[in-house]
Length: 401
Ligand code: PMP
Image (cartoon, rainbow, N blue to C red; front, side, top):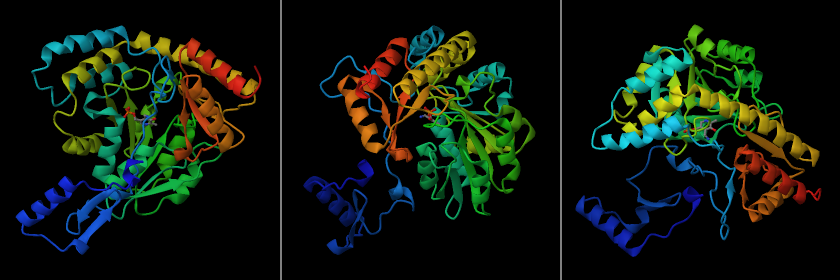
């Protein structure tokens, strides 16, 4: 990880720092120079507490050295890409490149409100749902506050909590599933935010609406429950927790255009919650955080309901097929409700060996030891030929073909 790598400063860099210090009249003896993580700093220049505890997020690998014709199944992307309507909107946006985008995202928020049956003035849009997660931590958690998330929860919860100077608190799951009782037991008077992804990444498991409501009901009064719905569209009939938000004032939902809408490369997400909370988040949002291109492609994608339905159905069909094909060769997984399967191996050594074998075949899946699942590999549900290729390769690895 970059954050942990020791880097030797170049001579030019050292001279530059020295000159800067001299210029500012704050030059100090060499023994005051300190090493923070990988960075060399003088004792006066320090980032906020928590920042140097952040381990850089590593995205899913996209290439294998020496291989062409690889299949990327490491980032839970939609193998079918975005809808044609979204692509057309993207192309049209070229005519607006010289214009600043709207600051209030009104057209995109209206599209979201129409299609999701919710109130446009309670929607906030961001650079991926990552940015909404970041806003929540920045606005509601600081030094001395606790941000809760689950044992195998999405890594950005910890990163955003640390960036805000808050204390990340990881809570045990039950058989790779969110444990509501454990989360409630971990709450204190310092708990400000509780993040759960439903379905969760990388486990693919989900808890019921009744359990989510129990969690919202049991939180201390100063805490917000954040329902991360990055994979909500993959679950037939699931509203991402919307109905709960309508009756409570302590629940916020985050959603993304990166998964079923096939726009991961463009970076667009949104959040929905009580007006008072959305108003707070908008105060720290950059006025031009989304470009015209992002806004227009996302609006078209949101309005193309049929495309989303087709992707959901195809994902569900192939996910069941893939999970069964893996189980048949001795690689079980929990029932996934998302667009990936968490394949379980006998141990970390076997999972790593399988990953190496798959890479050798040009198949890129995701190791999840950073999510405390070293004996697992997360495999995105690709198109039919990708699913067949990966199932075949895992079977060969297990000596079953
Ligand atoms: N939440 C979860 C659970 C995710 O898996 C992801 C993407 N990996 C995100 C949020 C962030 O997605 P984005 O920033 O692309 O909207």
